Amino acid sequence: MEFYEVIHSRRAVRQYRPDPVPKEVLQRILDAANWAPSGMNRQQWYFVVASGEKKKALGASYAKIAERYTTRWDDAERRKQFIEFAQTYGGAPVVIVALTDAAGDPATRKMNLESVSAAFENLLLAACAEGLGSCWMTGPLQDEASLRQILNIPYDKEIVAVTPIGYPAFQPPAPPRLDPELKEKVLWVE
Image (cartoon, rainbow, N blue to C red; front, side, top):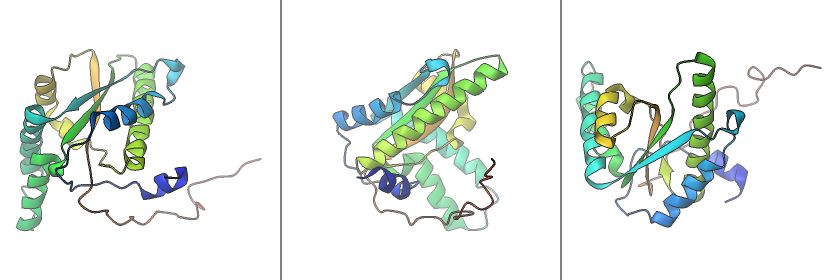
């Protein structure tokens, strides 16, 4: 897939086919993540790739969050669907959790978060180029203690984001861009 086509076709996928993702494909997308730019070239990102029982445990944790989050929703069917998505991460066979070095200094923490965010975006774009779906998620981090326990994440690492990875059950439509002509989001100066 051509680079700009990948950029324009990547979507937040929330329904996946159960087909397994070959390890060599996962390795390629993780390699793409590893080539991201980073502050001071520290490359301070780490990834946990969960499947099987660990993925089920992550889903149970996220389902509890979804149940609390949707308590006041009027639409019972939408609430049910969201909780089911959370419990299975949309049926994706793999969940990837991105970590970075924990830092007490605000400037270092910001640099670390920016660096792992660049790596995570590379991962999502590479997944799209491989015909895989993904969904940048931070909601599961609301139960960080469970994530740490399930995946044995030490406290010298900060959990940044989570994504299911799998073959999309369907391709979601493109959401409209806010300011598609970039007249309000870009300031040209000379």
